[in-house]
Amino acid sequence: MQKYIGSCHCGAVRFEIETDFPELTTCDCSICRRKNALMVKVHESKFRLLGGEEHLTEYRFHTKTARHFFCKVCGIYPFHRKRVTPEHFGINVYCLHDFDPQGIPVRQAAGAAMP
Image (cartoon, rainbow, N blue to C red; front, top):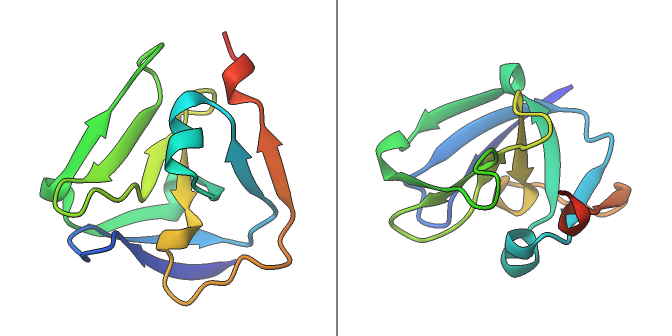
């Protein structure tokens, strides 16, 4: 496993993850379609918020279980706490520094069909 540093666009929110990128996911639920993120699933023990907690705002909808976080300064979505596996984060890989997702398999999650 490798460590990666990530941030929102303005750098107010910074985080670190550890992953071997078994796959990436996209999702067709109403919020994921709109934010168009490409995500990697990371266990909470492999995620560390390095700074900017005070700059995060949270959005919940539908069952209010998933916790989507956005930077209050620049509006970027860096990560969310997942609904079905709340001990995991979905990390927006486009927020990772010096990371190229090319060649990693992408799975389409069927979020819109979830009850």
